Length: 158
Ligand code: FES
Ligand code: FES
Image 1 (cartoon, rainbow, N blue to C red):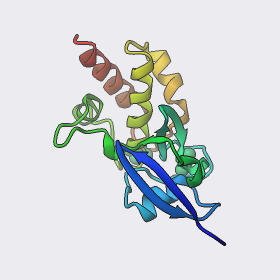
Image 2 (cartoon, rainbow, N blue to C red):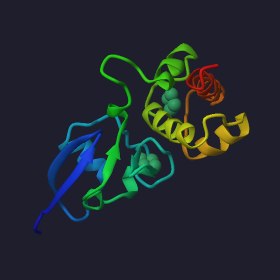
Image 3 (cartoon, rainbow, N blue to C red):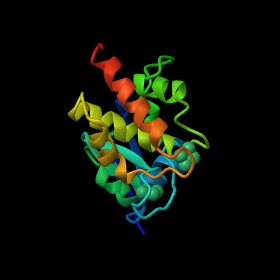
Image 4 (tube, rainbow, N blue to C red):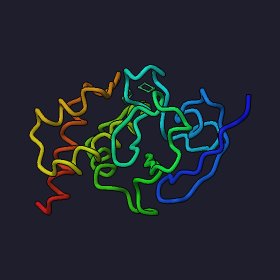
């Protein structure tokens, strides 16, 4: 079957790729573009490990066709740090030991960043609701929530 030619922006860089019509954005990111930070936990929209934003909207990249990235702006975990400087959320996840195996972590970070862009001062309940689509088998969630609250406070200048 003929390949689809896609021109998109990923983490601020204009990227072109060829994909099959049925290929997911997650597969192209990981297998063709070597952006392996987004993880495949379930492949069915249930775990959030593959979270990215498309035109600022939080999505599961396992549920998005790669061809749908045409003309859009995709942000992945690889674009979160500024060079060597980690995003406050990344630093706080480390400080709070909010990760163990790390498979869920990129998805949590992308989802939490998306929350704080919309709501810089979320309550604990709002954080837990927002992150309900991200599953973690290791941490028990509390450290993740504390890390997000702490990062939010720092980002507000508190
Ligand atoms: S891999 Fe996409 S939601 Fe689990
Ligand atoms: S740290 Fe292992 S699944 Fe979350």
